[in-house]
Length: 317
Image (cartoon, rainbow, N blue to C red; front, side, top):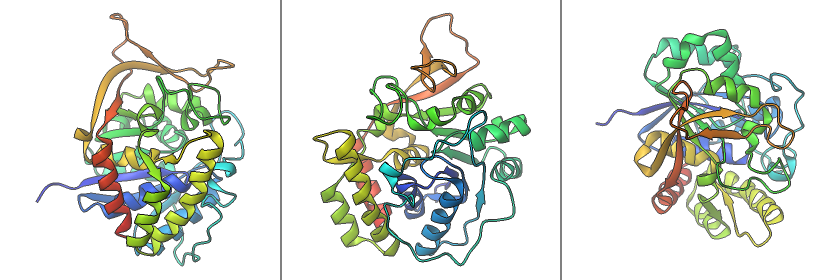
């Protein structure tokens, strides 16, 4: 039997975060060890509630959820993205209340505790602003090399960015807290960036939503109903678009199956001061580029295979 891919998901749940959680739960070769929550798509309290409710609906309330930071390192929380995820972060769809509660441990402290308990065994999937991860690294720099990899859903090198949401050439996660993203890049961890250059080509259409809803269990049905709102937001941001991007689920898939992607190893940094470029990841391809801040940037994906894996995994719950 193959070794399971053991992951911690750092989430701002969020519709595509919910889909990433269900993807992880539905893959036999992934062990979802814990969730840490933060602000981003929605405030941290709502992200925590959504995570607990989704896990319970999927029959996995045994998975611990630790609430984390509520704002970026140096600025206030900007209020989230209700136009993309709805006022409740789940497209206005109400899930049954959870009977479980978050664990009595701060999100960054859970990352520290688990990294030290299982050195070299865990993938940290940061599919939200990087603030929880940065707080953990500032408090315990040694954990950078204790994660097998840190996979970040963030960056764009060629995609123009999110229409009308953040500045061009910037993704929402890095833009929410550039200082935190920079701390992660400078940490010495083994890093993978799964950015909008690839995630915008991992597509979920109205036809896909109906097919998964028809096959799926209670959690999948709820998530597909929420995905209708998500799809409608894309149609507003990108007129003529008939799909939404599976940003966070793709990051999970590439952690488990890195062969789904192709990568370019780059020296990179995050712009923290620019008026137009704050949050942008800047690659340095010069021969003299520093080797101290390397990241494997995903440049292409087997999208057809991912789409099949996604549908099967999400429908399982």
